[in-house]
Length: 329
Image 1 (tube, helix red, strand yellow):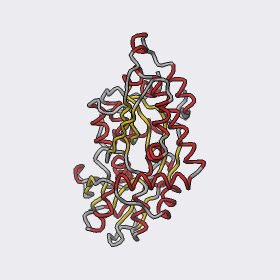
Image 2 (cartoon, helix red, strand yellow):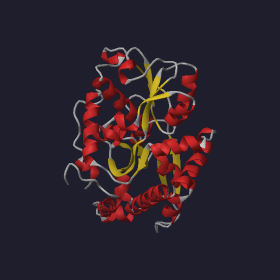
Image 3 (cartoon, helix red, strand yellow):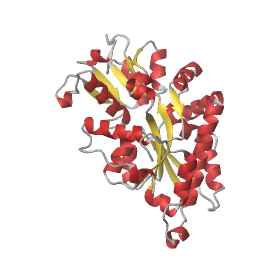
């Protein structure tokens, strides 16, 4: 595998099927529940659409492993999700590459299954903040979903490239963790001056007159970077390969549906957001957010390795882990 090779779902399915499992493990395929973690963000649209359409539950029911229940659990950030993952409370999860790479570096039994979304994050400044460019972030307060998450790591890289630092690193930029769904209220209360936030919350802020000063393409890598990946607990995958294979196929089917029928996918996303947050978004806001996000099952190892390097740059790891063992067996 070269540095530029992308791992497709068809390749990953073959790798999953070939996961080493003893006859005892194979016989022990008795999980009656698959515990799924995800966020109420557009960048997690494969999770939202798959849940709304019942795709995951149907796939698990047809896996040949008897009655299997899907237990879907909402999280507000990758940091809290990986804590649950570490505690053995989650089997499969949609999560940002930053927390997933941190989990790998900390020796958690994690395997990268597939990509889910790329780009889909923007830096928005409050309309009365006086911020017009990245360099204007000096002395300001910027919100991220949580410390150590994907947007936090990206923000610290942006600051580094513009000769700025966070206050914790001796600079003047205050980085404040705020759940994405709460950022609109934080802007209204003038608690923060800007935010690096996943969609659809960036588009929702823009609809209120706030200004996008960093598009999904200028955040990093010209927009060609993973925002959400699909991971699985390695031990769960080894003990329940049929269930994981069924879920991965359902994931691929859902991504294909999103790309084939974006209008229907947006309706499904809005329905799930209403259930999870109590609010629906203006369809025009969702359309704008969709335009800034790409949905794919492909994993780009080169991008993940570069992100691991940004994690070190941000001070969340001393060294970048070798991700090869976490991408395939």
